[in-house]
Structures are given as C-alpha cells and as structure tokens.
Length: 408
Image 1 (spheres, one colour):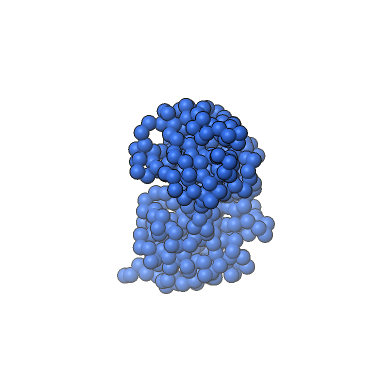
Image 2 (cartoon, one colour; image 1 turned 120 degrees about the horizontal axis):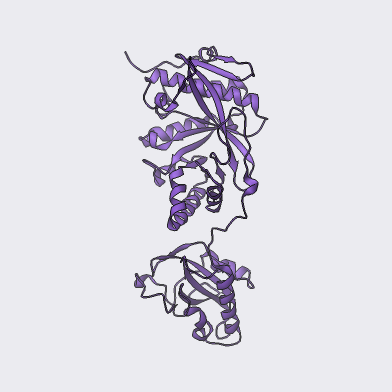
C-alpha cells in the first residue's frame, strides 16, 4: 500500500481538537495527547518580544511524556506524519490566537518530509489560516534546510508558502548541508542560526569575526537573522554584537503554555562590530595628522605609530581616493606573507567606506569594519582621518592588526 496520502480534510483535523479546563486547546493523535507551548522570539535591538515559536508536547494516556523527535524523524509513515504535522499547526494556531493580541509572529515548524511532498498534500496550511481568520503575514513557516536535500524541491516549497502570504524561515542554519549559494537563491525572510555557531564564537575570537561576517552576508541577502539557543547574558550580548536581529533561547524565555517575556533590559551597551582600540589609536592618528598639517614629512609624522606592535602599515591617499605614498610598514609587523598584494602608490581606495566617511567628516578619525589585510594575510581595521601632505588635501590611513594584547 502506498504511503502517499490524499489531502486531509480540515474538518477531520478539527474533530481531533478539544478544550481543557483552562480554555487551552489540546489534540488527540493515535493514543497521544498533544498540547502547545510557546517560546518567545526577541528583537535584540529593543528587547521587545516580537513573536513566539509554537512547540508541541506529547503525552501518552497514562501521563508519560513522549519525544516529538521520535515521531517527526521517521517514526511514522508519510500519511501519519502529514496528519501529525498539520494537527500541530492547527493546534498551535488556535492556542496562539487564544493568548496573543493582534500582533506578533507565530513561528511554526514544518516537517522536511511534508516540505518535500507539499504538492501532494494540498493547500492545507492555507485552509487552516483562512478558517482561523489569521493574517498569514504573521505566520513564519520554519524549514530545516538540511532536511531537504533537493534544491528545486526546497525552492518550490519556499515559493509555495510565500504565495500563501506567509514569511519563511530557514531553521538550524550552520549545520549539515548549509550552503550560502543555495540560501542566497531562496530569497527567504529569516535565517535561524544554529547554536553551534554561537558556541564557536564564544570559544574563538576568529569565529566571532566570521559570525559577524555571516550575519552581514545574510543581511545583504535581504534576510533577518535569528540566533537560536541563547542560554546566558553573555551569549545574548555576543549575538547582538554580531549583528543578529532576533534571538531565542532558555535565558530569554523557556517554552511555556503562556506567552513569555524576556530579560533583555539587563544587556549592556552594544559593542560596535567595527573593532578598534579606539581611544589610543584614534588619538595617535589624530596627532600624526596634526604633524602633517604643520608641514612634517609622512615618515616623521607617523614615526610613533610605526613602533606600535599591532601597526601593519601607514599610507596617504589623495582626495580622489588614490594612494600616493609608499606603504610605511610597522617595524614589528614582519615581512608581508603576500607581499605582491600589498597596495602600492596608484592603488584605488575611493570605494572603501572608511575613506568616504573620513572625507565627509574631516574632523573625526574613522574606523572600518574588520577586514583581511591582503598583503599580510591577517585580520585588521583601517583608521582614516583627513590630513594634508605637502600642502595637498588628502586622507591619512593606518591598518592595525587584531591582537589580544593591543592597548585599550
């Protein structure tokens, strides 16, 4: 007998729902009792709860708990899994409507097998949303990217849910088959980063920079970024500093039958992702610019910087953004690993944001985002300030390597 199932009638699902004494909805499925819990999704910028993820709790008739993973990861045939998946969505939607005001997102997981077979199962989600009178733009359908290996199937499912008016989130991104290329082509609304990325960023400074770079890439793709599994104040701070828009986890709010709040008022000031030991280095560069302004030669003006342990190079560019001086290398920087890639006189830097900001605000020392210094092959930041050289207007720049023992 085929495991393929005909589209389930909505009335069949509704018949499996009932209210309990406190007014909550529960459901029955093959001897199991299903109930809803919700975990808050928090905007890291404001600390405001902007949505909740619906999660199912399963119990046998004797009160013993059952593990949802067992049923959603192969414990059922396709017909049973489709029914359980749809029943969970209907259950969560009913309970969310009972608890929530007319705002905020409801995040709903969809089984990868149901995603892969969405064409066979009809427009059941659309029927559920329409029958409830729920605005589909408040519904976020979560798809685990690693659970759907075929790219065309995944793209078709994303298009299907977006056509219903729902938002689409890729879940557990950063594990398994995660692909930047595939993600970029999907055009999803939210990407949920797996907790493993957060743990790596906690353990390694380099991973923190990579996490910030990944978040920046995802923003460039037009998606919001949600960090999953936030379990401490420091992890919430790290997620916010990396640029994540949203977060979810036990420290913010554990799953509960009622809608929860989050303790984000305890977070400290946001640390800028653009790193620099700003107080020292910006002052040093401003002093060097002052020496240039009174007629000092470039080598003389930047001599104190060249002795600093983290200084990679200093150079001067004209107002058109073209490097006009030699690169003056830090005395402790060592020999460049990739010397042919080191910028030389004539190199064009006018499109670099730090240069344009320095020109736009002549009195302030600007700091770039962390980037790779190609000649040395190390992560660095560029600081820049307007300063004349031999009477010609331009911008004085220095590149500072990231080191744990830099002055603060």
